[in-house]
Length: 412
Image 1 (cartoon, rainbow, N blue to C red):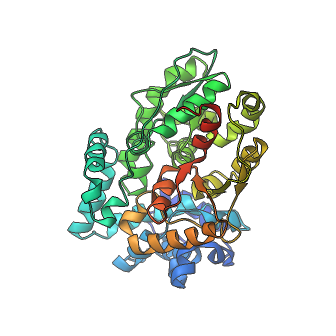
Image 2 (tube, rainbow, N blue to C red):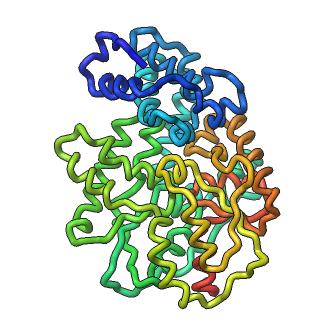
């Protein structure tokens, strides 16, 4: 696709990056078949091809409107379109550029700005943990819409204390320790059983995705730099990997090298951090042989475990099939939905708060397909997907690492 950048974008990093991405697009429309919002709304402008057309217009000098902003806002950034694009269009990076440009030109209403500010500052604040604890105390009194965002209180269990020669870093995350702390401790226990020590750098916080995707890109980059600073001493001491047990964080940290490529002070370190980053599932093939003889309880083959692969895992990180294959190798009966397993569940970071109507439609559609498997438990690999799906079903929704932990440490 040929584009002629407006003078204000010629020679700028964003303009050059967008032009290179647009050049790959042949406007074939294969992406519309796998776009969740196009499936729901049937509007060309609510699919990747239409949004690309809107962004191209803006880059060529057309004035964006609130309607332009709305269509870009409705995008889940699930990157399903990237998995089906025959031309390799880097849509995720293009929509980051497009939203940044449009937001700079189109003021948002005061109420909308306030909500977005509360999300990007509140979710990443040290006060989030205490606020979540308070919310869990009064959860029974909350209206349903608010209760959906506050999971029941969870016991974290013990953190292993053994010192191991092999060490990995783990990002604790900004919301996961407060919402579902057992995910992190279960991860540490499973890795410990395989002879690997999990280390957490206390100074590291949010991966930067929340602010970055709410168009506070400078704030998001500041968090990324802070994490790099916190991790770097451990990198210099030779940690094997930086492990992510939230796939949304994983896809972001794997892109530090891209996002900070123009930062002379951080580009090289950011690239190294991205190189070291692994989703937890990527460690599984090497862990399973060590873990199999350590199982203290054999899996019940009659128990059906449904696995929902998050978009950030299968489309953002391009990792498919690893969790199901390796858990099955340990004796668990793991299944994915027979229909639309590639589609987003509607969580998408803060999307379910900002676009609840569409988010809940996608959630219910996903749960209907998972329900066809008649699962005893639903699992996923991202905190947002887990809490979003749990709000629509009585079937327990958990992180897959918790199931593995229970086979190794049944008393936890």
